[in-house]
Length: 330
Image (cartoon, rainbow, N blue to C red):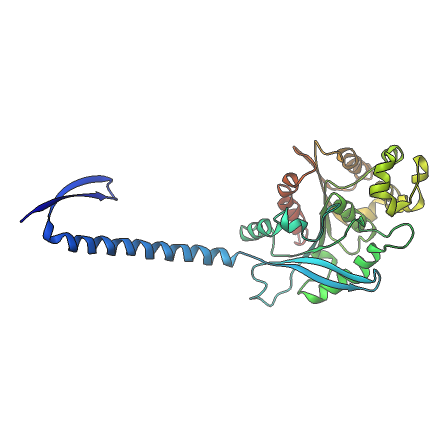
């Protein structure tokens, strides 16, 4: 009877043995190896299925494109929604955060570039934030306010039409103490405007890299920048101090803070976050100083970073945690 040298690895002890197996038993050995191979494949498939099942239990649902009909704007306005993982299986109602995008982006910005669904999934799964619904409206380049000439009344739309519509569509706790707002850049500005003007609606606000300018910056702003970014909001062909119009002051976060009482300002909790290399750092620092002088409690963060998605992705979880903590009773 002939024999064949076979090398067999003991995987548990990491040792190698040299056996001499009769060649007549080669078929039996092959069958045994095939059984072991398929057993490993089946075990791996089961493990992968379990991992996917567990992950699915912690994955929220994204509705990327929904629409609200606006009589004020005379058009349909798109928005996106993040629903927490247990939304489909529960009957509970949820707190809400309105998350506003920046200049030139749209309602999908926080999903596409900010990966907000992934960050929210993880934060909810590990208990950093409570389960919440996140609503992301399309604000175009409106800065979320009413324009000086009345042609664009986005602020009226948001407060009078949009919020009531979505809070009836989804199982949202439609109360101030369960409603927060956040946003980046232009959306950070919109966050401040809504929280400052409508403190009865929001318990907390988290502007990231908010577009806040003081009067000096506006007066000295190059004409091209004014016409391309702010003229539709505050007035066209304005130069120097002529830009400091009534519309400007009605929508300047710094001016609003200056004119409101400290008691009124304390009705909303504020989380302010801006990078040290951001071109908007000065305005956000002035915002911090203005609130400090009024003795209004707030959180102010200046982290290493610039005006980009890397900064906002690394800051959104802390912002949502701040808002989520505001939903709790102490």
